[in-house]
Image 1 (spheres, rainbow, N blue to C red):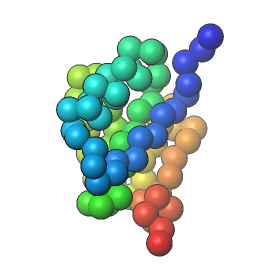
Image 2 (image 1 turned 60 degrees about the vertical axis):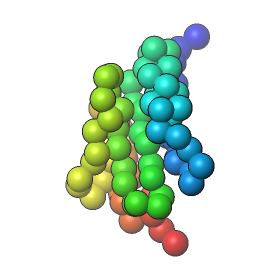
Image 3 (image 1 turned 90 degrees about the vertical axis):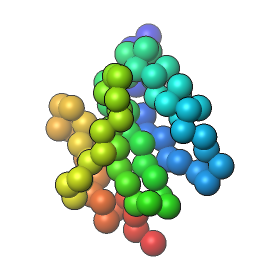
Image 4 (image 1 turned 180 degrees about the vertical axis):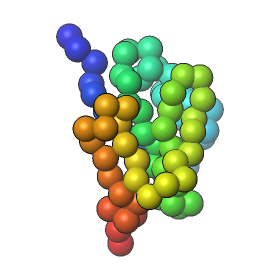
Length: 78
């Protein structure tokens, strides 16, 4: 079975960062190349690439192959 193309995790108020990082690492071990983490409270978008989480400072988050993207406004629309 092939790995998913993209996984998106959205943080909730009760998430613990250590548990979230464990989950992101597990996705990476399963061969998922595009792992996004969205923080609605802080309005942050991040991409996980082993072994680190990288904050996206631009206006859109994009998969490595440039085939899927979302703008900051789309993600955080009220």
